[in-house]
Image 1 (cartoon, rainbow, N blue to C red):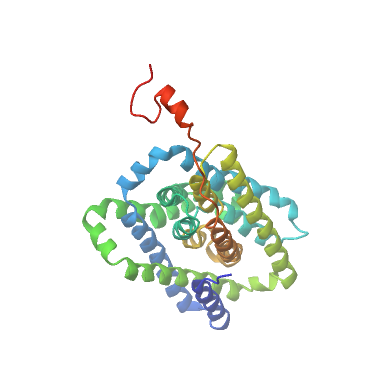
Image 2: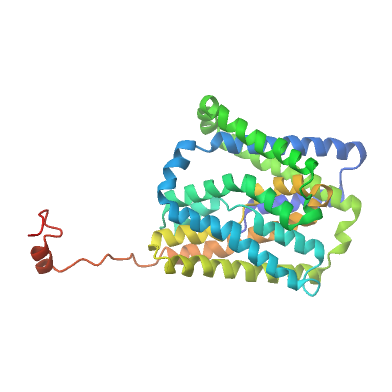
Length: 337
């Protein structure tokens, strides 16, 4: 099963923060750079998302509503239900991080990759991931403020202002300027992708440095981490089953069910980490730990599922026999009667 190389970089960044955390003036500089990096990330998100493609994708509205319901309704309900696991399996800070994980939008890149590998509806996966990311920019902070209460910043004027300035304003600016910079962004996609990933690493370093300085890691024991992994494994299994059999009950075809399963069962590390840094501030290190673990778990499990789905037989459409077609005119190019 694959291990995402970027996860190794994230783990290395966490190790660096543990050995050489940013303190004093260095922490202030790192915090300012992290804030700028988050704004840059969402500016690039806005510059990349094609408004025309998003509008075209609305034609398959049933699929997109299904994915959004899985991402922002079913996932949070399961997250709230997990409250009953405190304090037996989870500490309260780990539960807050788990609940935040359930509020994060779906992925784009891995959903597309796995849908393609499994011979699913790739255009639908592209639109579903894009819609989820777009909706999540507004819905995730609002859900976090509602469900996480004080630990997520609440509905204070300061938290709302942070969300607007660091997330929404850069995204809108990217959309507005896309007309002029869209082609540049498309030509330099690989370079800007490195900027994306480097920005996230900076966010992780800043968050975990603050956690090390404050001693929050003494709150997490190996047994608690094991409990968190077990809970996340169950969460992922439930969502994979619900998205597949739920889409089947809604009479989606095989290709659409694949897109729904991969887009509706995963959470975006790239979107979640910057949001956590804005919403949780100094407590972001523990808040993002469940998301980082879930991200690697979903990649490993979905890679296996996608490989198996790629060997599924192609669904055949039932066609009436030739005699019936000749009697009814179906398939003959003529009208019956």
